Length: 183
Image (tube, rainbow, N blue to C red):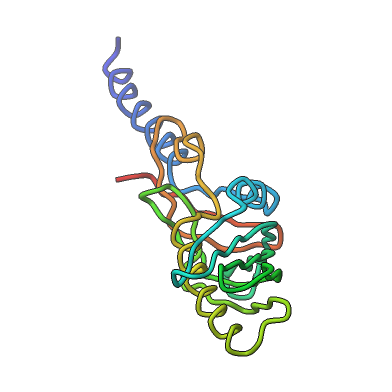
């Protein structure tokens, strides 16, 4: 092989590797609201005891995108029961939170969540105050324990490269998650 050909082989290999490096750089994954909703539906209804007296059950979750500030809204039906009151009270709760990546669980969770609205039927003001405190406890547990979305292993691996989610932004139709190659 001529000397010139020997020089071209390493240059061609370097160019090929440089091209492959571009394929394994940062990328984005779209997660539609419908997929988020389906995943959340599978984890409901949720039942939690709060303040040692109240049993709260959350059911029929509904997600909504809050695009202006990269937040997600979650509303659900709530049923509150206690040995101290008969019958159980029915109502609804709405909360919102900032989106955060939980790399330990490969999931998207709500952070800094707060209750926007909490209502149950026919509760006096004293009981309503206790129920609101109980709802805050449950919301904290729900936010901490119930991810909004789990990444599938194939979403975090591409061309033999392992990726980690780094940032999340809301779109009109769902979420855009930026993935970076794992170091």
